[in-house]
Length: 436
Image (cartoon, rainbow, N blue to C red):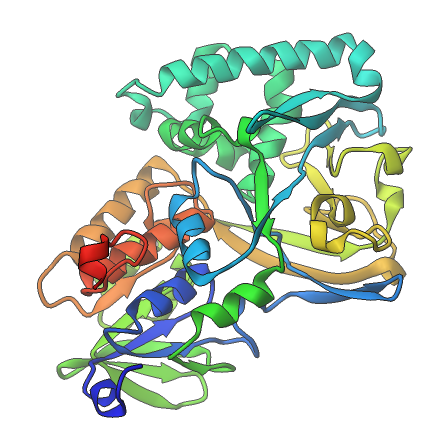
């Protein structure tokens, strides 16, 4: 326990935003600074859109959107969760792909095989030549992708250019790969194709298909309080301006309240961060080069949008109309998320294209997510270089600031990088001697 006098003598630090980047930054920096966290919503951001679902006499909290992860790619996230005591469970995200008529193109399940998982056809996909073609094209694509990860020129190519150059099977790309990666990156197909090839292949070859997906056993409501210990949280405090004020930075909320801090960590999305900054025109210009896409998520109990025989389907249903630039993806949460088992089926649908019965909809949320292009990558590199300058007091933190696809891991990576530069010890990286 730090004595009150010692706490008062610490330098002050503001964290703007309570997504996983802001939460992890606050947690990692609380021992070195007096941390004040600003959140625009009424509750901390990771759980800002969560809803209660009541069925069969059971009430469970549903996270919007889902937070899933895996070994092989989410090293810092898993280390953080282990350090703060978050229980992790395996989550089944096997899928079924159907066209605009509801015809099933491919249906697969997952079976445990040693320490990994073995995907295999389900239902009529065992007898479908089209499904077997997609399966063979998939195996060919992943085998080549693993070989190509050693290429040094991948960062100069977009993922779309890589797909065209590699000769990847069109049926697999159009019906499976692009729909899967569009929902993973919450963007349209063109944005997936615009990603740098090396970033996309790093994710696709990390072992996610063999190892399987996981989620926090008790959702974000279990995670958020663990990372807000020993910090001051100010909810309903949307930040309007961050500007220099003598030797400090002034943070002014939209309600007109202001306070000065020795350091400020902006853990908002790039376009939101740019709008807050005053007197940092060079950073604003770079932040405005970070693209983002808008998405809609619905939580509902309407099974009519799924293919027939929904009860026998794998948990994730991809509706893939020809000519569309996105898929509609529905997750049967009662199948995919262990804590929701035992309740009546409830679904989370990304990019709803078809009508969901209003009386069956629990929530509908619009949100934005950054994407990566070769140009935005250069902008982020310049932003990181600015943070290396002596005397820097303004720190940008978020999934767009890491050299990865903007997912949970990238957000924590960015907070770890900022915390190190501000003198914090990363507990899961510290040796026993260093931690004493």
